[in-house]
Amino acid sequence: RLLEMDLRAAVQRNEFAVYYQPIRDVARDVVVAFEALVRWKHPERGLISPVNFIPLAEETGLVVALGEQVLQVACAEAATWPDDIGVAVNLSPVQFKSPNLVASVVDALALSGLDARRLELEITESVLLQNSEATLTTLHELRALGVRISLDDFGTGYSSLSYLRSFPFDKIKIDRSFVQELSTREDSMAIVRAVTGLGRSLGIATTAEGVENDAQLELLRREGCTQVQGYLFSQPRPASEVTNMLERPR
Ligand code: G
Ligand code: G
Ligand code: MN
Ligand code: NA
Image (cartoon, rainbow, N blue to C red; front, side, top):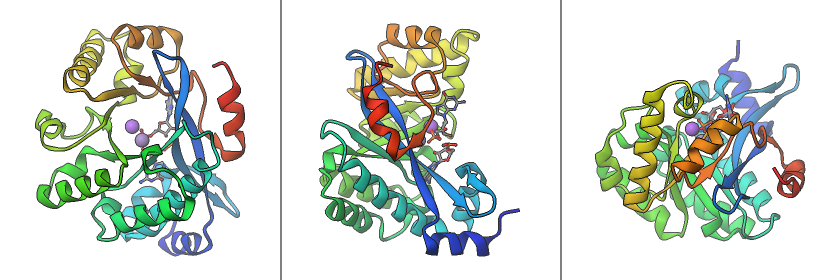
């Protein structure tokens, strides 16, 4: 079992690594960004997946400090990439609501020298559930910096179409559960078609997550999905492999 004590020590020692998964533009067929995905480099247990420690980090509030480290590392590493390549960083709901969020984004950008337009922040629908006035203020402050905002895991939470009207999103990420069932379930196809159509009508880009095969890619291309991401192209890999991922045709 993972303990709060261990996680707290890991945050103090900065025992985390950021892995990167390419996000590709469908029309141009090139990598346009990488999603930053944290891993815990545990001294005894090896690499631990975020699904096994982010919930504990959220419960204990440690996710705020952890999230700041991830943001700083991701911005610093992205600053060394070609300047047309962006980086997408996940924000937990707890981190999003912390009073320091906007200042920590400003700091990460200033320390790294990364152009704010290269940074995307991914938030989930649960962030939008409560306190919409404060949420809206934060989203507007982030956007005023030049940062872009994506709505992650779209369709899995308490999705409401009114969010798309009330909040300033630049991108919708279609959850991989819909993508994985694309060729086997007609209702998943219908949902993907509806979301890409919605994005097009509202002028919001759409990214399909969890693309694992060519059949899925072809269906997404046909529906006019803007970007794709998934094991078909690459698993998340360490920063040292970003150059390779950029050079690989696919
Ligand atoms: O990389 P996978 O790689 O296993 O990530 C699993 C889950 O952990 C995903 O839901 C992802 O959004 C979340 N996650 C990965 N990295 C981070 C992070 O830096 N911060 C937060 N809050 N969640 C993350
Ligand atoms: O929740 P979020 O979308 O941030 O998390 C991304 C998660 O999806 C990570 O755990 C990442 O490792 C995983 N992932 C990325 N591509 C694929 C894929 O093609 N298939 C599956 N099953 N998972 C994927
Ligand atoms: Mn994400
Ligand atoms: Na997602």
